[in-house]
Length: 266
Image (cartoon, rainbow, N blue to C red):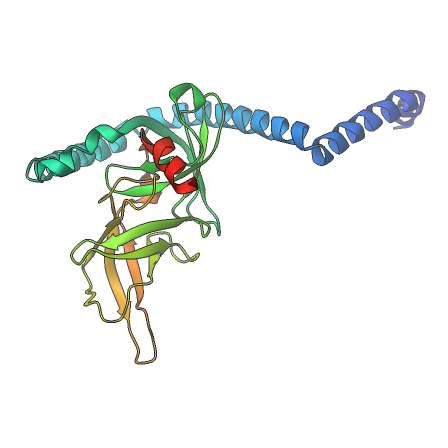
């Protein structure tokens, strides 16, 4: 023990120097916005790379479960394709407005008060901040930040994410927001009391912004409350996407976003 103390005493100058270097780096990163952003992007990408390697190993032992989920997703896509073929041509003409980029989920939280998802696609795959993200079953979230190879997403299970929505049966517009409740449900807001909202009504995206195309499934109304003094319904929506087993997502790029945004600015 005495030898260790003697050694540390002899190397005190080096220890002080290293300590001051660490303190300087910490001050630079925390109080300089440019270096702070660079450090966060680098650390996010490094963490994502480590997580991806870990997930690659664990995914090998989950191939049976993944295959089952892919079968269900394929069945869902086939059903939606048959429905699209029955829609008017004016709706089908809007399909070319969007590009879709598939990505694998490498990190996903759903039990926190604010949840995020990391995916294996980034700037090199034409992913940009603000793009909408869906699964084969419904809405997932919106891109928050991007590096060259990865992207972080605001999950719909994040209280800051507001999804412009509508009741599919009545075309009534509203907003879906998660209010830090259970991970399978969110709140449907601003549906006026004169609308005959029902349990079982399907809630879809409204298409009123450049994030999501119209008619992407969000969920199904499974609880209603409307008292005499209330102007709007209190409604809960069971989300279509199961965030406990989310494996693959699709990022949506609106090719007309810049044009629409330029009109909004004017």
